[in-house]
Picture 1 (tube, rainbow, N blue to C red):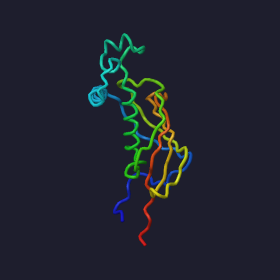
Picture 2 (cartoon, rainbow, N blue to C red):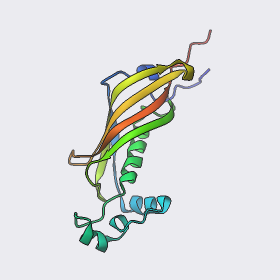
Picture 3 (spheres, rainbow, N blue to C red):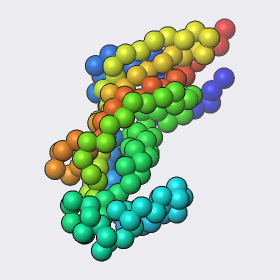
Picture 4 (cartoon, helix red, strand yellow):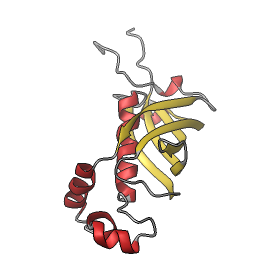
Length: 157
């Protein structure tokens, strides 16, 4: 028996076309430096201001695309709808639409595309259409996430 309810939504609480909002977060210099160290991706477009000013096409450094995706995942966790109820991240189909710059503030919006019960897992699969937007409302990343979610616990018999 559960003593406290997880913050996240159980599988049964997701409905097709339901919209879920996440908080915003500003991408910092420290984020880019730490992500480069963690991932081993020291591409000059991310780590060398002089090089990026000359070669990025934007006149400045851009954040790693995968940093944006990683932060989006964290924003979904902070929003609470998957906290304690997501059993597995099953897959994604992702597009990097526009650059994210140091100093940009990004947020996520997720819309439930489909749900599929999985009796064997005690829950089901939830497919989300996820958009990452910057402070101007421009979509910078977008795609589909598939998650295995816990079902609501059965009442004690």
